[in-house]
Image (tube, rainbow, N blue to C red; front, side, top):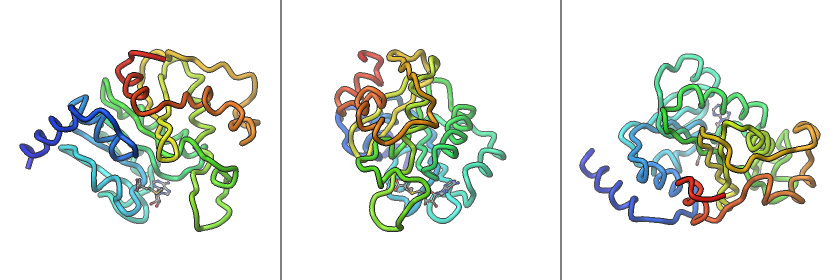
Length: 216
Ligand SMILES: C[S@@+](CC[C@H](N)C(=O)[O-])C[C@H]1O[C@@H](n2cnc3c(N)ncnc32)[C@H](O)[C@@H]1O
């Protein structure tokens, strides 16, 4: 089993592009030779089932993954470290802030955090609480992303695909965002006007260079 994962890693190392969250996660695992993966919010295991890692832990209170719990319950008990953590649980900025803080505490040295739904494309898609059950809902994940962009100890950029896949690396911020407004006062209209700069939106090839710390 592990031999075939190693072969897959060699393939992924040669692969340079990704266009969705699971391809991005697998690209990061392959290029860093990561072994341990944690996913928060697994639903039907669309991503969890396609990630190639030696050890996978998936947390969801309702379905999928390997641990039936909320992220708060899981992090309270967890004593393990993970090379890559994918945050895709409750899309409320208040909850995501907690998930990011907790994820940073159990991230391996040289680890990476990926956050889904960072780039909502309509005002309705980012409304909290969620208005209707159907359709795309990204929640206000973007507010946490903008707040993280103002931290000097975190480098973050967002892949402009699959509703925004943020890549967070604990290192000096190479493009610190200075905001003159409080995060809680930001509106969707503010995001729309400043989207590219605030989210640090990047194409797959530019995101790949960002991850290698080769460009802004
Ligand atoms: C958008 S879905 C996840 C999709 C999945 N990661 C994928 O890529 O296909 C969000 C999931 O988060 C779960 N969730 C909701 N609240 C949560 C919480 N507090 N902690 C962890 N997961 C939560 C939901 O049960 C739901 O399955």
